[in-house]
Length: 185
Image (cartoon, rainbow, N blue to C red):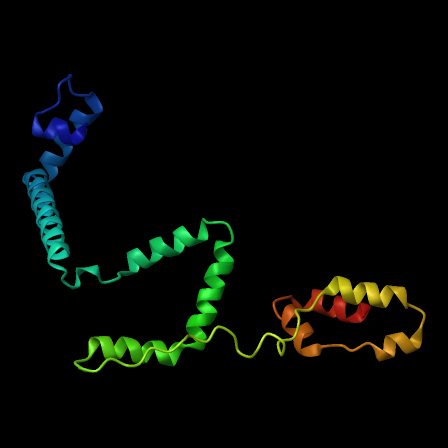
């Protein structure tokens, strides 16, 4: 409404508040409105020119298909909104971390002027084989085994505590909660 009033394209009568705002701006900075309209016009023509440039570059197959941070964020959001999306992102992250050196080599070879491309190899998806990986800590399994044999001292002392799996699960807890959990064990 304010912009239409300034440009004189408003079809209905101008609002009193709008008129006051326009007059106060014109009194304080006489050429400010014109300069802002000029900036807006330059920006819109620049955007239109960039859009035309992009479409011709895409038609020619230039490097306009380069991923930008905004496109990556949009892809991440799209993955997140799908069912199981956060788990997919976690898997993608771990695969990228496991293959970081290989991916860097591939990226540098694409950017460099090497004539011979690097050989493609399958990506690592796990640290070790599936059989070697320890199962995740399950507190219900521990509680069940512990509560069934609560008074049986031999069962308590023979329990195979997997501390390497147990401790990382509690690293994010505050000191008081961790001490209470530890005391109750």
